[in-house]
Each structure stands twice: as structure tokens, then as C-alpha cells.
Image (cartoon, rainbow, N blue to C red; front, side, top):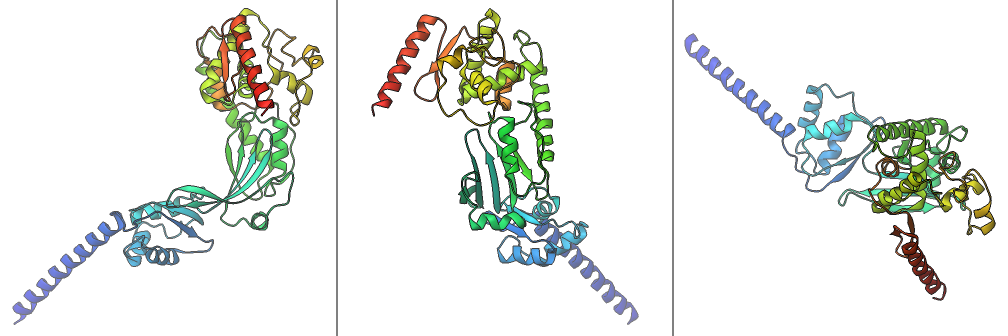
Amino acid sequence: MWRHIAANTLTLLIVLVFLTGGAILYGQSQYNGPGPLAQAMCLKVDRGSNFSRVSRDLAAQGAISSAPIFRLGVDYGDKSGDLKAGSYLIEPGSSMAEIVDVVTRGGASTCGTEMVFRIGVTRQEVQLRELDPQTNRYVETAAYDPTAEDAPAEIAALFDNPADTRIRVAVAEGATSWQIVEGLKSVPVLTGDAEVPAEGTLAPDSYEVRKGDTVKSVLDRMVAAQERILAEAWEGRDADIPLDSPEEALILASIIEKETGVAAERGQVASVFVNRLRRGMRLQTDPTVIYGITKGQGVLGRGLRQSELRRATPYNTYVIPALPPTPIANPGRAAIEAAVNPDSSRFLFFVADGTGGHAFAETLEQHNRNVAEWRKIEAERANQ
């Protein structure tokens, strides 16, 4: 009888082992395998939340097949204390393991509400946007010009308590250092003041900020980024360019940035100025003259006068036979790379062509024909 009991006990233990092993394998396959989510979703994790709440939310939205298995996987991976507040884009078919990685990795929110402070060359704008998980595109829900109007209620409510809203400062290529500082000072979530950095030393880009960050800390990040970009570009420069230093490259890049907003033209515009420098010709570019008048503090708002084109100033490239003494704006990476690696051409002139781009010419005769064509386009537009 004892032998029979022992045999049955052994059999039961073997069955339990197999069942336990099968359950473990099943749990692992559910945790690591593709999940049931059919369409992308935005998962919001509130501050003070926990994985029990998150698992229930995921299960309710059809993102995971089992809340208990999800929580067991979190505990087994020793990540129960790593949950980060934020809004996270969960892709279709994401496994439980992938979701846990997303919500414990931290960093910027990848979906939900985003507030963008845009600092442009001619204007500023604040946008409130919401990511549509299905299209992975942001949809604008509110916007305003902080220099001309009060913030809409839905945006103003976030200034004091941005919660998990992602906040970005987006700086346009070609903005001056004064414009950038003034723009940052109008961002309510930033604190403090700062001196205006040297022209050209700020990298135009998108910078994530948090409530309580200082204006100076954001500027410091921009300066560090521009230093890296300039150093990398100078290291890979064309050895034949007539530029003696990274600082001269930055000056030329700022002129290129102000002369064209067409990406495909930057190399050609750069080639015109490089060819002129090689021949000792004056650069004759209006943006430098304008900077000499405004000092980068706003836009001129009118055309240049003949007296201004004739007046001798350090920035009047119709008079000085060289680069101006400093950059005239903050150029982006593409303009810097064009300055140090321009297209190979024989172009010496360019003028607007009426399409937003420019007509290039090798000779003054060709250029005069292009100018006449542009004057004709201007006259036709004036009569419309």
C-alpha cells in the first residue's frame, strides 16, 4: 500500500512540475510575444500611479491579454519601482515586455499633449497640440501670438501646472540671438534672465524644457549644440574654401541662411559667395546691410535705401571687400555644412526668380537679364 501511495505521490509531483513548467512557459510567451493591440494608443501614466492601475488600463484598452501576467512580469524583472509618469505611444502589437520598457525608461513623453513655443524670424507663436495615435500626427487644438494677444484659457491653464504636458521651444534657422533671448523670456515656464549670446552661437533646433528651467540653461544647451555642429563641419570641410577659421565659416553660413530658405539652393548660394571671396569681389548681400541697421533686434520692415547701400559700415558688403565682422543670424546645420562644402560652380550672381528660389548667373550680362525678368515679375504682381 505504501508503495502505491508513494507512486501516486510521485506521479502527482511530476504532473505538478509539468503544469508549473507549462504555466511558466505560457506566461513567458504571453509576456514576450506580440500583444493584441490592433491600433496605436496613447497610455497616460499619472504621477503617483502604479503598475496595478497601469495593467488594468492596458487590459481595458485591449493592449495586453492578461493584467496578472503583466504584473508578474514586472515583478520578475524587478521593475515595479521604475514606473515613470508621462504619456506614451504604444504601437500596435507591442508585447508586454516592450510596454514595460517604454513606461520605465523615462524621458520625453511620446504622445498626449504638447505645448510648442515657436521662435521665428518674423514672429512668435505658441501652439497646443495633441497627438493622434492612429495617424502619429499632432493636431493643433489652440494657438496664439504671445507678442500680440493673451493666451487662450486652455493654454494659460497649463502655465502654472503643465502636469505631463510635453513642452518644447522650437527655434527657426536664421533667428538672431536677440530674437531668441526675447522669445525665451516670454516662455512662462522658464525663469530668470540672461545676456544675449554672441551672434551665430545658438543652434536653431527644438529643445524640450520643463517648468522651472532657466532661460540661461536653455541658451547654454543651444551654445553647446552649435559648438558641436560647427566643430564637426569644420573638421570635414573642403580644404580649398577661402575661409581661415570656423568663425569665418559661421559668418558665411549666417549669410547663406538669410539669403535662401530653399534647401536645394544652399550649396549654390554658398558657391557664389565662395567664388566672390576667391576673386576679391564684394559679397554685395542685402541681409548684411540690414543687420548693420537693426543689429539683429527685430526686422527692418521696409526696403533698403540707396543711401544705406552706399554708407560705409562694418556690415555693408556693398562697400567692404570681405566678410562682415560677425555672423548676422544663427544658422542651422545645413547652412553651416554648405558654407564649408559649397557646390562646385562658376556662379557669381543670383537674384530672385519669382518662385521662392533664385536664378543664378556666371556673367554680369546673364545676371542683368535675370534681374530684368525679376523686375517684370514684380511689376506684374504689383498690378494684380
